[in-house]
Length: 355
Image (cartoon, rainbow, N blue to C red):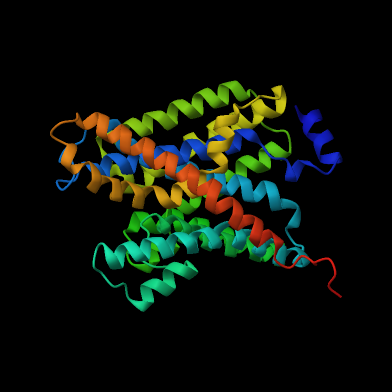
């Protein structure tokens, strides 16, 4: 395996290689979070009033998977940029166009829902914080944006490492250390946003990537099995003891399981040229669109199913809503995200005929 990775590096493709297992992992994580929100939203009294699939509550763990994946992907794409100040603008632009344009479209849609359906006018501060993804303790426009606020902090610190490798590494290490210690001390408010146990999962992903790029991942099948076992045990724990979702130790165990499973998956793909089914790759490609739009869709569909809750079994209604939210998220990717990305990618390119 190390010889294979060395050959990849010698061709200059290693850091840009697109791993299909990572795409499938994104899709899995998005689906897990979607099932979590379908269950926890529709169990509210104004919709179904009970939980048909308690196991779906464990889908919250998909967020931990997302954070580990993010750390891996950023390290894979940009490790060779560390200490290269000339690369920082490229890094920031790539992160901006990946996150902000589709988020802005989604925020416009959810803002209209908040104003015209919920009859609530968000404050200017909330709107600005949402559109700029500034640190905030509430997310009145888009509930899932709390994860993006933490992503942006990670990107900012990674950008520092691109500018100044060693000082940036020290700064990032200090951030990880505080994010490990302070949650156990019960910090609240913005301190809980800046120093959250979730941030350590970025570090786990970066560490797995470091090992992967140097060919240190051995016995990938075993790693995948062990990691998946730990991960799904934690899924079950959170499904029936959801209050533990805020426990730092449980979060770290879930993240560790995800990290080991990802190490096994990428190691297996590198060693065996593992082929991932195209539908799973597509689900990964659509994962950001699905993640952004699924909860507003579930909330809207919850209102639609209320008249049928006495005629149709609750488990069927939950599955129908979840499937519809997934389909709408995929359509959002095809008809909104893809054209939007083509437009954004074309910005700044010279046009023929222009001097």
